[in-house]
Length: 147
Image 1: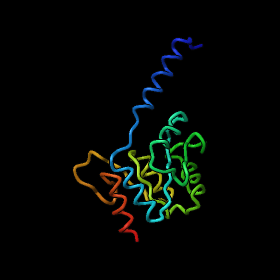
Image 2: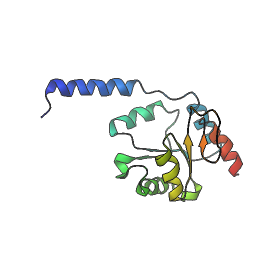
Image 3: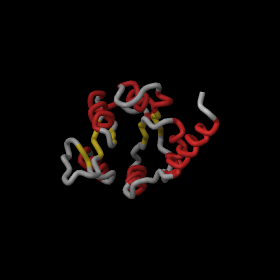
């Protein structure tokens, strides 16, 4: 059993961590630009349940769908979470462009599933456009190249 003091301390740590979450400066403008183009916006995340609502509160608008691992019953890079995402936004895998900061979960896993996955590497000095992007705004360039 966990003592009340330990539980309270853990809950306080969790609250503090959640309150420290912020969006990167390129997130809102990129999301607005995608929405203005009529492109569906979704989240696919392995975040734990307590983080979901606070993250959504930070976004400039509610995504068309959220594929939270705790709701999907699968975690990235398991194909079941990508299937859950595709069903949730009513798209085929080859119609989905996925961007994320984890190579296996956000690039390799989605690509194996048939999606267009890219690694978001904010620390890269150059961008290998076939593999990674350096900012979320690069998504707009990728979208323009696809159409």
